[in-house]
Amino acid sequence: MDLRENEQIVQLAQASDAAVRFIGRIRTPWSTRDQCPRQGRIDGPECQIALLPEWHDALDGLEFYQTIEVLYWLDQSRRDLTRQSPRSDGSTVGTFALRSPARPNPIGTSMVRLLRIEGPVLHVQGLDCVDGTPLLDLKPDRCAFTPKAPPQPGDSQTA
Image (cartoon, rainbow, N blue to C red; front, side):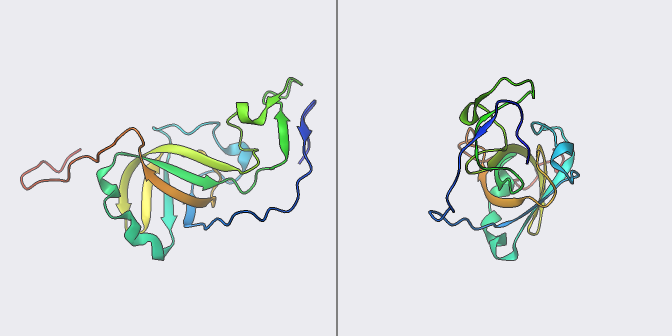
């Protein structure tokens, strides 16, 4: 990938200090990075998070949360930038001062609205990544310390 004016990189050795296990793939309407929104919107298009079958049981109880955090591996991002020019105008700042996908460990996060769960597939709104992005993890909203109450007999079935 080309560098923008005044950006700088660091030479990296082969990484060997961690192993990451992808647990599924994310399905979005965007096939390239240029098509992706800069930040996900909670009212954005419906997307799917497809877990590998062995992780299906790990979803038990997640349906009681309205908002979840999705962690994903930005596999198309460069990993060697120490300074970046987010506006392509030649001015730069350090990588850690940006939410750019170009990072030493390109982990993306989005807070998404959970619409429904169908088997091993979560239907959500709020993602901002390329179709097919590898899924790292799912977590309940860190600000919602307790899930919403499960439905009780006689409750209305409308949300």
